[in-house]
View 1 (cartoon, rainbow, N blue to C red):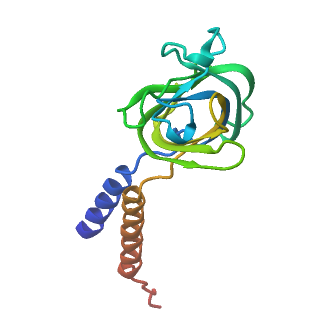
View 2: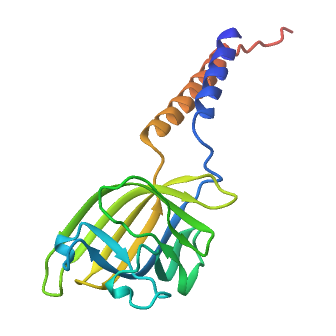
Length: 208
């Protein structure tokens, strides 16, 4: 009995180490707007991004660091399903450089969906006849009131050169391998406990 108790306790501890999934922000949302390169006139030589703010006249020459305007937004899965917006839908902060630190509330949609940028994973530029495209991939965290903060990934792509449009998609990241490992180990221990319980059962027949 003591062995079974220890197995049950260990399995419970392992399962408790895995965050509850029910309150996580699972899903995908896409949005777009306009952007210009920082540090150059061409996206291929850009050192950062200045997002266009529709509320400030003359922003094609820079807007003094004001957040850009998210013009449309569309939720495509999970908790974001059913979200449809035609601008302005929210704001996105400028990237003075591609090597800066974390940015809290890097973008928000409807003042209710927030993405905190942790780090920029990669920036790649592809040249083509239409002015090329710059692709940025960043990691961060979704924040929505009533849900647990959830790891997420952002992919942002520009279409053209100079002042041009961009499209972006943010989606919740899958659980970390360590969490999966703990969960699998917990289930394994519970299975071992159940098998041991079956072996300990003895069947006795009444004697006539």
